[in-house]
Image (cartoon, rainbow, N blue to C red; front, side, top):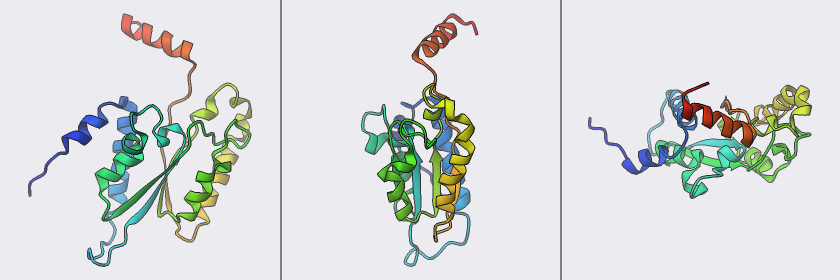
Length: 187
């Protein structure tokens, strides 16, 4: 059996920071493990519905073409459309906290993702919750997370749920300081 690589896909992955590429690889491997169950003959197979829910990381903010470069779009190309149907329910700036500045659970994307009846849900939420204006409500984070996940668990499709670990929000001043130190070789 010969394997080939899609150099365009590999090149597009290299545009992302290492931590995002690692997350994409992790999700890909989890999906392969998820798919290791009994396989149906191709004529009878129905694509597994995957809902990628989250904030701007899922939406693809900062990429040249979010509909093509976002991690859900790349994941869909990696998995192929015959066995997997991957949809992006990311909302830029979304928070998990219901008292945050833009709660994902109050966005249209939330209701749409529930109506999609996914069999697998990949959650990338929490980064915007660490912003200074949202973090005063941090004591409600776990309860809000459980409530959001409970919505998916209650679906008749009984989806499996994967959580990505988003890196925390840092102010631009902290980021500039960190970059200066790393360029100078200090910590």
